[in-house]
Length: 232
Image (cartoon, rainbow, N blue to C red; front, side, top):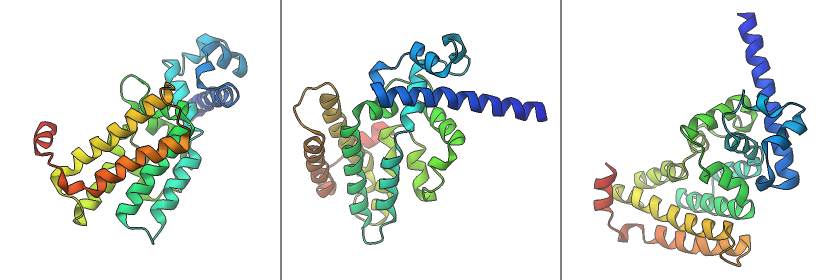
């Protein structure tokens, strides 16, 4: 039993060692300049050793990028805990924070929420928080499912469902509204990431939120019955 525990500690220590080395490279040179060779050189191991712990470099970049997400998660928690905000205001402010941070740090958000990570990306997220529990310990329990969900299309659903309970939107419109807001962000984010617009992060956030607010304001003017049928 002790041998097994020591082995797990050693695995965890090595895993964190490579993640922190990758995070240092991201901070100094950016995500685009991360390579296995650079990680190995910084960590003091050969490249082959890294593949004993990570099946591909995208996983390492994902875990390392999570190290930069704390300011965003702390801001979300502050909005959620604010007793003066309605559920609707919280939903909109959370979207605004997601926009602001994603446009300010597009490479980090792409690595976490957009990049192809292969199968079971949520398992990677759970594994990350199991090794860095301090990153989630201060997050209120009702909010934790949002942070444990890597799929952006599912992260907004809990609050939309609360808006249904409060009578603000119709149940059949939840997935449609969720999909529309996501498509607006994704379109702007893709254009922003690929330098297709000259917007700065604040302008990109402002324009994205203009449309998201309009969708939410007219939430019950839409009919997504056909889409709801297809989703089910």
